[in-house]
Length: 286
Image 1: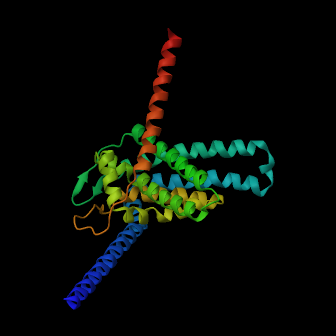
Image 2 (image 1 turned 180 degrees about the vertical axis):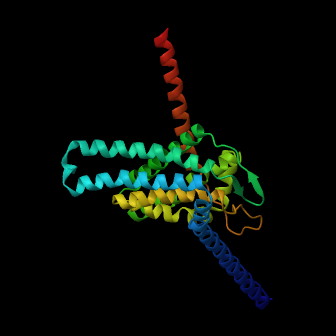
Image 3 (image 1 turned 90 degrees about the vertical axis):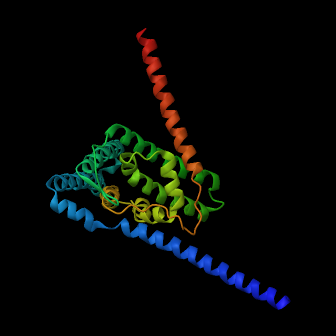
């Protein structure tokens, strides 16, 4: 009886190890799948080659970003960065190029006339206002989230701070890039979160290169490369086969409730600020 029990335990342990390795393998494959999808530049170049409007928009975008980031570099090179106007100039141009990039990305998305999922779905026009507001909220939310983690952990667990912030940035970049597609397909926030939480390795892989470029923006060249690459991976979800959760998925989903709570608090704050602004204007008029 004892020999049989030992054999059953050995068999159970072996099955557990196999399922564990199978889970790790699926996580790795989904991560690699997301990473590969984020570098499928051939799909973008094909659109640029075949579509005159996309080609014109893309080339104009590259020229403007290169010019905007090249001027501060010239100021620094000739030691003109000591003037206080340099700082005003840098922040002003950064704000202008940020707003320009938001409008540009939506215009470029509107010039792509299909979404390739399982069947071709005709795509309507993307409304700029809600998308730009959402993207701005994402920007502020991710900044606040990373700063909170830095404050909480600080010097005590610096390696954990770097790890958590890296994961957040990877998921954030994926959220940012897929946001326009989710909006167009009328996915609500619960469905978007459910997809992201279930196949998180894919979205970690998709946002990895963008995160690496983001944390290495030490000069104007890296700034320009980051912006151009972000445009590319914002377009790619409209051209690739979208990965959705599988029923037979072996690994567990993660919880993104802290991120969603922070995002919702940002949305509510902006909403109440806007209401207060309208109320104040009405009171002044009366």
